[in-house]
Image (cartoon, rainbow, N blue to C red):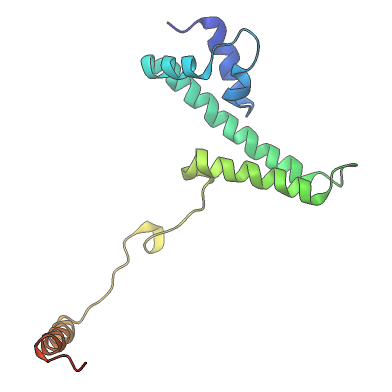
Length: 144
């Protein structure tokens, strides 16, 4: 069983957008391997960690907005702020691509498949022509 005195602090930590790596580096905390083993063995624990991470991803997105909105902080240049935001956004896109990745719509309006009208007779004629040309090339001697 996962010790209760680990579950609550871990979930709170992850919900703030902080990393599992940093949590495990604290004195008295289990290793990442131990936490991963608990997640594989205990579905409830795995679910709680996943939920905490989802909340933490939103916290990281909020951090991006805060960093971007900060008016010229003394001692921090715009390039550094841009790097901090871009790094967080790239990590979010890797960690949760369905919510933070680039959205690519495949299909028509509402995600419906794109329908293309094909003139069957014309398509058959073009295909027959392509096949005939290919057959002619194969039967013709090579001019080299």
